[in-house]
Length: 195
View 1 (spheres, rainbow, N blue to C red):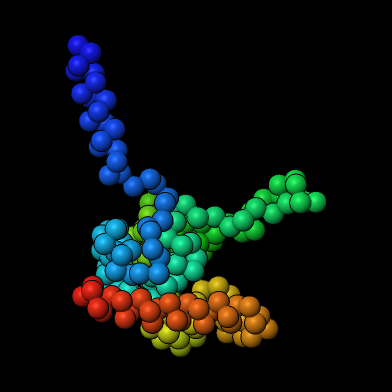
View 2 (view 1 turned 135 degrees about the horizontal axis):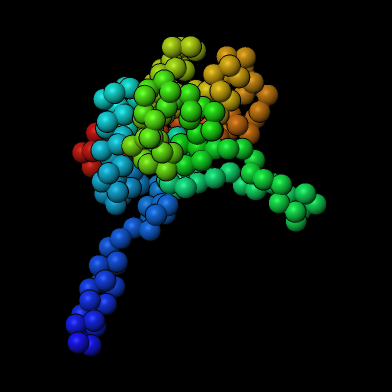
């Protein structure tokens, strides 16, 4: 009987070696091909969003990289009083796309995807496609314009329309990095025949 339990235990241990821990990011986030080879379901999600909403895969990937570093359960940092007493998170942003509670509810109501979860890559990319299309309609930003889509994503469509980002040099720097990453990811994905 003990050999039977030893065999089961060994099978469970070996079987768990291939399991990706929930919420962990892929390795080598500077290589788009590596990311989608490690997580094939990511590419299925990116392609589905590209088909439905028209947002290029590389733009989705660059913004997710900036928002969550591909961590399913990413949250904003905690705030502290006097550096030690927890005061709560900086915002309600959560998941791959760092969607805020209110915007996520608006997305679910607008699309009828009531069971969508921010920690699900397919739901997160669909949210991004929906949001970026609203940005295109409201502010005329091309879906392939990673820099300005990111600025509108960060500042909100009203803030973007007012130009609130112009007073934030740090944010302009981040948006430029997102744009560069989108270009890099596009080149990489082209070379490995993923787009």
